[in-house]
Amino acid sequence: MDFRLTEEHEALRTSVRDLAREVVAPVIADHYERHSFPYDVIHQMGKMGLFGLPFPEEHGGMGGDYFALCLALEELARIDSSVAITLEAAVSLGAMPIYRFGTDEQRARWLPRLLNGRALAAFGLTEPGFGSDAGGTQTRAVLDESTEEWVINGSKAFITNSGTDITDLVTVAAVTGTRPDGSKELSTIIVPTGTPGFTVAPGYSKVGWTASDTHELTFDDCRVPAGNLLGERGRGFAQFLRILDEGRIAIAALAVGLAQGCVDESVRYAKERHAFGRPIGANQAIQFKIADMELRVHTARLAYYDAAARMLAGEPFKRQAAIAKLHASTIAVDNARDATQIHGGYGFMNEFPVARFWRDAKILEIGEGTSEVQRMIIARELGL
Image 1 (cartoon, rainbow, N blue to C red):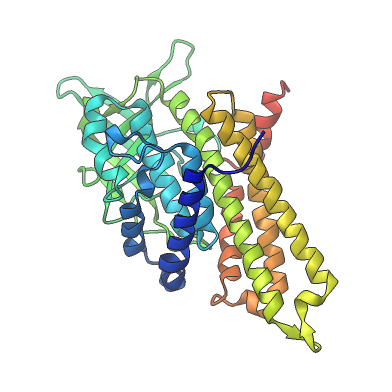
Image 2: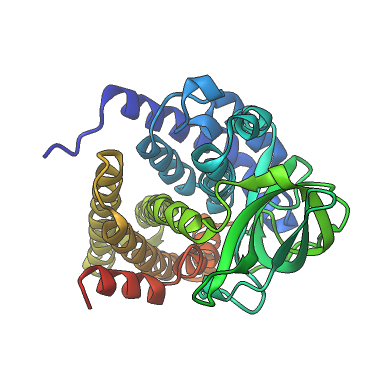
């Protein structure tokens, strides 16, 4: 088993690392403070082809694989998680459902702009009263056979990339009927931005990820053509489970990037900061704390590498994805806390990256399946 990167993957990692340091780092603190979306950065990422990384060239993608996307997310998150989550959500939750489940017509219409970064798409799953319980979905879509349109009513919460100036669509999970056993029939439907009855609420005031775009969405007799159904009717639950399994690997990679950024900043600060006549990095207490941080990053990286390898090999990967996401998000929070402690009072100042890392880390234990949900998945996969 060889965990060394191929030349292509190593070249990609290097180029994204350069982009993060040269394009993202100089501007992201200002965006973070102003809660503004970094359109110029997103444009540069699009020019690099990052939004098309795991998609075939025939659809306008870069012909890479999902592991390439994970490497890019890790390198971006070493500098900033808002930019990284924008890419992750745009690919895993935005474009990927259309690629995996869409018709040829839907792919031809939507994918070209999504894969070159000129447009973003969002995935409307979570609802205000139902977070982890996706089966509790209340949003409904009724097919009006007289007009051949879906009529959608309901609301969604915490939806990333749903309200930017370049958002083209939201894929909405909705109840479209009742199954013979009485359970809900869930389907996913494409709702283009600007559709009458589709309203995007003002952005949330968030603790972290403040340079990413997040909104609540409402649908009030929102009508879209029947042809906007994504995949088979009634297969929505299976579709978003597949999408979330893949997305957990990507979130694990992002979490590893944040945790590695904490190590980077702590090593730098420990060499520069002097106390009692010597660098604080000369103190064994600081050395051991940073060594533990690096240990966490290394093991979490191996976990998401393993999950990605299984996915690309066509093997079952649900359990490994849950393990990777659970472990990586946990160590990201741990590293952010320790990095802030190493920086002392400066770690509490937003001008230092670790303060941003600290505020960004917690959501990793919540988004795309809470840590409790990951433990449930792991236990079920073990037959419990």
